[in-house]
Structures are given as C-alpha cells and as structure tokens.
Amino acid sequence: MNTNVKRRLMLKGTLLASMAGVAASAGLLVPSKVLAVWSQAAFDATTVDSALNALVGSSSLTDSPDIKIKAPAIAENGAVVNILVSTTITGVESMSILVEKNASPLALSADISKNVEPFVKTRVKIGKTSKVLGVVKAGGKLYSTSKQVKVTIGGCGG
Image (cartoon, rainbow, N blue to C red):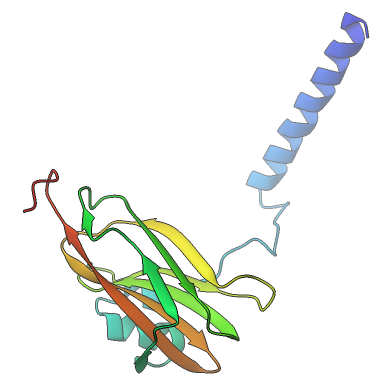
C-alpha cells in the first residue's frame, strides 16, 4: 500500500472518530442499554438500614452461609480496599456491598441477570475499621453476611 492511500485511510478514520466523539458528547449517540440507573436516596443514606430501605424497601436481613466476602482482614490503605462478594444462592435478583461506618454506607448495588454468575467485585474506600456487608436479594428476601475489616494508618496496626 502506498503512502497516499495509508494517509487517506488514517485521515478518514480520524475524521470518523472525531465525528463520533462530537455526536456522543452532544448526546446524539446514547447507548440506552449501558446507562446506569441508581437510587440516589440509597447512596445518600447515612446508615445501613436507611440505605437498604431506600434501595430494596426493607432492611430485614437473614444471615446466610451461602454468601462469601473476600476482603482483607487488615487494610493498610483504607483508600483502596478490594472486595468481592459471591453466592451460591439461586435466583439472585441483586447484590450490594455496604460499609457500616462509612459516611455513605452503600458502596455498590448491582442487578443480577439470571444468565450470569452471581458475584460482584469492586474497590471501596473504608474510612475506619468497619463491618463490610454483602447483601443478596433472591426470591424477594434479603440475605447477608459480613466481615470486619481493620483499617490501619500506614500499616502500623493503629
């Protein structure tokens, strides 16, 4: 391929990408299937119970050994704590992660399709030593488990 053809292909690609970027920023290309929907009241709540009530209409939790939380027992840097919640419960409708002592306890909420493996993974900020809850909604009921995560300052055990 000669240089002129390569240059024309690059210019066409750049022009198309620029036009797509302008259209997307103007709101003309909106992927409706990708847009997130969330409960602002649940994320603005200041307690676990009020967050759950705003999110799913109840704060009545049943402890379940079928939910697992993978999180560090000691987080040396509370600004970035990896948390994974998984379950073997069938018919999962949604999964949430809450951090009890955070100013805004609801860290994550996800609707789960029946065609996917029920687990969620994220990084959260944990301000101080706190209980992390994994909440699963299945069959109209709420199931949960929790794990204490100790936050240290500079890894000194404080």
